[in-house]
Length: 237
Ligand SMILES: [Zn+2]
Image (cartoon, rainbow, N blue to C red; front, side, top):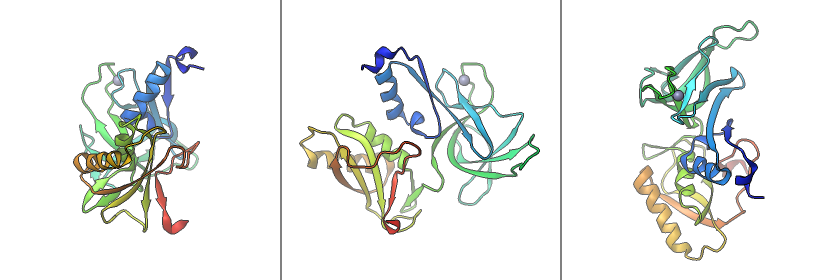
């Protein structure tokens, strides 16, 4: 069945940052001929705390009556000012809950804040989640997020399937270069040496780290129905 014929007008994504990763969002919108927005909450705090409007400019904070929302530096715990372009981890405190209220609960969600005026008229700040703070790697002092790696590989479709896995020999976040990354190439792709070089050069120029890419056939990396594991921990297998 052609998904474009299903008549779906809008898809709201949640629980994964895929809906906010540009290459993945673009593919879903093209495949279904619909608009994709996302929502985000936290099962410990509230199911939906942020929701994105049709302007697709990030998720608006919608929990003003129930949640006090702070932004912190995930490394030092220092509180950051909620201003345009600042990146940090979301921390939640319940304002109106009688049973098991949370006080300064660390969500581990790593977001970039937007405070410029949204065309929809809502005035609350917006966020785009780009990773989990416990998934962040540092390569020679440079912060590297598996979601950004996935976005670059996804942008090379149809040469790749878009699936990746970062392979770590030891616990992070510090990883010595080169970072080993498995990338699925698509069926029919023949010039693998050139593709490997192209992907490694993109990681170098756009994300500022050195990678050793291992190309694997389409379908060989694990697929996940819930949260995707973008990091393979060799010491746990
Ligand atoms: Zn808006």
